[in-house]
Image 1 (spheres, rainbow, N blue to C red):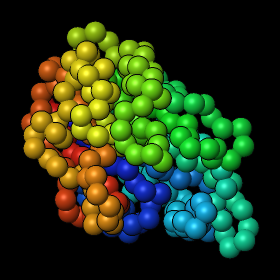
Image 2: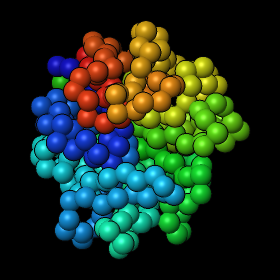
Image 3: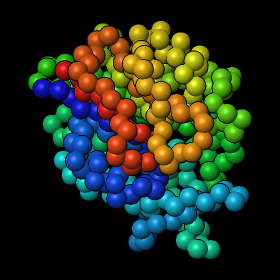
Image 4: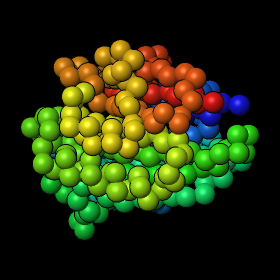
Length: 269
């Protein structure tokens, strides 16, 4: 029996209805989401993120919405920041970060969560490059009698671009440290997420020392963005696996478009 994994930057639920429909129909065993919003106690559906002249609608109940369309899953939420969204002129404090959903019947037997750049901001979302975190799980697969580690991250965003920097190199080493907390030696390992990196980044060499190989670039995919993203630089999302992972299918999902990022779909035996 295959294990079906999806990794996706949810973009705060901006493309909400297609996103909910896709996640409900896709049937992932493990879902790794980045840019997930959660607003405790807010009764409305939409808020707005503002930064200078930039505005982006955010689904206030995104975490709860995904939980509702995946009722047979356990949800794990790892906030990276807490800051204001806007309901007109009123500020509403929100949390923003990673969410991992695991199908019930796949025991989570290990877990690690932590910051790989910066730390949880005491007030507001903070200055760029803002704090970023990662979340790792080790799940037992009853049908194979084995375990696999799955780690997702959302890499730091630098206003100067996606090139290598000392901060990104430090982030890579911090990610390795988190991986080593959750993975057992000799077991399969998958690392995924929106890395905010160019394909030739030194981060991949750091991760390569764990035996990880990126499936996006090595399988000829040149675009992980959708038509919602009009800019150049079409690589952002990556999925890496070690040789212990028996890959049956890998796809960068072009349709449906449910975000400004494409979903990454992996099936392992």
